[in-house]
Amino acid sequence: MTILQSLTPPKGLRVVVTAGAAGIGQAIATGFRQAGADVHVCDIDPAAVDAARAAGFAAMLCDAADPDQSRAFFDAARADMGGLDVVIANAGIAGPTASIDDVDEAAWDRTLEVNLRGVYLAARYAAPDLIASRGSFIALSSVAGRLGFALRSPYAASKWGVVGLIKSLAVELGPQGVRANAILPGIVKGPRIERVIAARAQQLGQSYAETEKQNLEKVALRRMVAPEDIAAMCLFLSSPGGGNITGQALSVCAGVEAL
Image 1 (cartoon, rainbow, N blue to C red):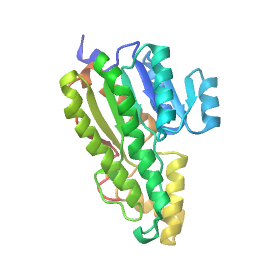
Image 2: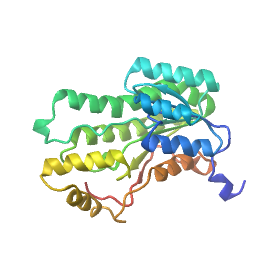
Image 3: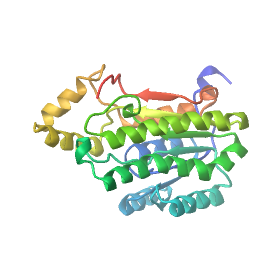
Image 4: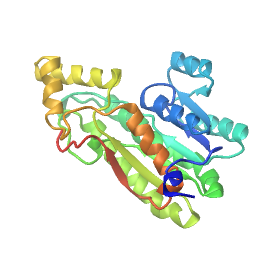
């Protein structure tokens, strides 16, 4: 195998992507399918699930934070593919944009449920399969998982938690051949970041354009990243060339150093 060949995942990988029917998850699922993988996705949005099925993916409606639904999804994927090689825990929500004294308990709890418990459930239900295949577990954190984030404390807390969980899984499962890593996206193009910027602009009492400009001024390359950039990192981590990378929090963010 040449170095160049080592940068491509082997064909036939059995891959699961949570929240894989839209946005970053859709880009990840598409990238793996282009690399010759068998891919199962779940999503909480019925319309997105229908669209994924129409595009040829095995897709299931699932709230990744719900233990019963998550278990059912992993059971179905396992039964169909005969095991799992790569699990991408991608499900996440933005949570509220508010000062800490205005964040209510329900909004806090839901953000932690989806963003952190969803990763835990994916790891819990996938671990036996990944041990059997000496596979790879990848969770989506955020640059907010390494930086403070004013007015977005539930989101930041959950994403820091993802990094801690991943580092723990790497140590726990490493002796059994399983690798675990977190990817920390920066400002990713798409409808979700547009909603986040709009909410922050409203909270700060300024225009959308001004808020977007302020965000990009904190990025070294002064640009957003694309969902496909995140997918590319997932593929690399699942390739032979990424075989000795584990326990890492890898930023794909164009150089974000403040939020």
